[in-house]
Image (cartoon, rainbow, N blue to C red; front, side, top):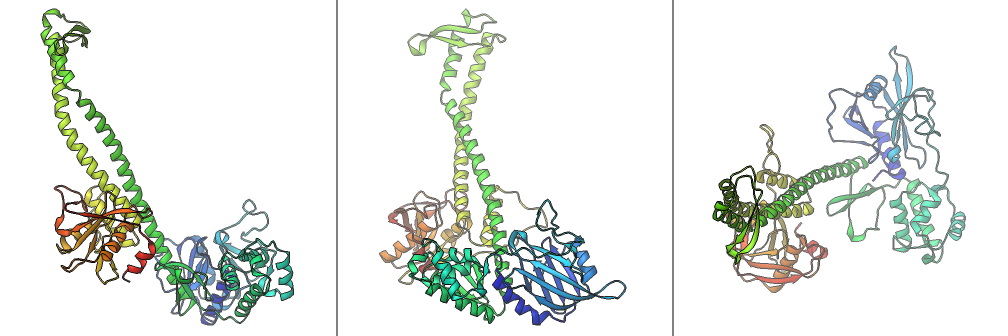
Length: 579
């Protein structure tokens, strides 16, 4: 999420006492939208990227380009050695002004101002002189880009225009009641707040609606009056005026969902709330995890594309092979035609384009055989015999190649199922290594080998305390089943559906029916049938599971099994998961 005005206010109030009076030692621009000001023992990050505009102290080290960008060189010229004299934020605006006491090349004292506009896709970083003129900006805005407001060197800086709505801090109880009465009753509480007031983010508007009605989707007519919503807004306004902020991060499945500067209750048990010691620490952790997620998603998209391309190529190849194989099944016709030509050599002359004769293989039925007029009758007969022999040999090789293609196609389908379930960067590394080993991705050159980083399988615990292990990828499935599992453990897998191998650790004792059903539900959840109901899951002892000769990683055959039918549910999976 982009930082809102209230969170920005909390960050500014946290930074002001820490930075005021400090001197800029270095200026860096590690990325196109990022500028880092280095003070003694502190690193101030100013990010003007559309997806993550913010200002914060950071502990993360970022690589700098070999050649600093022009804007970085400009900042170094004007801000190196400058001292921070103040940090301000216009009320409820997503804008921060950092004032510097600086000096020019001749040593004359002057003022410089660095303005961060943290406004989504319109975010910008602008350097001003002491008169308020633009020296330069990270993104220049000319008249073609915006007729209302230009940001160009030499122009006086004009802040972005106000939204025209009433700042929520200025509202009175009477004014709120009048606005509430004039609004359509079907409007949701958060929509009403966002339409009427300036300075509220969608997250906080939903939270105020939740506090007033206990539901984020509640509508105005359900409240029975403006009182509950006004009290929620009034309490929030008092917290903002008094700067009673708490840096909290909302996590879902250990992944960052959102962050806020006040407690948030609208997610209930669906999100975990983590409190940080400072807003800078919160932003560091939140955006580092988001960036890691994005890198993981990109890696996943790359692997998904490679696996899907290989699968589609195999499908086309298999279709051609099946067509050729069908043609070889009619090869006896070629042998019969060669026999008929040989039997009628005495009637034939060179230069004939066809032979009309009786087919003594089919009760002397008349038949017409195409001939090559450039060949002798004997050569035409030899040509048909050669085509027959070729088709006979091709049948054997095509059958082998089709079996290999079907095996690889099934394997790639299983890899695509793995990718849909991969959760961490390590999962994608393992699948990438697996595809390289199988020959579907190019192997890395010398000096670029990846380090082996074994990942543990997912672990769960049944209601009676039995461990359940679930493989994350084909190589781990194979290791888990054929090497790690005890021969007396139970092995579970969805029937004729791609999915993970599941091992129910029994300790040599027969498991209860409830344990088997819970393990089967895990097998159904970690498969392509996750969204289905009544999923068939086979189970047998590990001793009955074998790998076929020449099989790809994770491919097994099994005997003496039973089948149960389950419907996978996320609630059950989360309840059984071992943290």
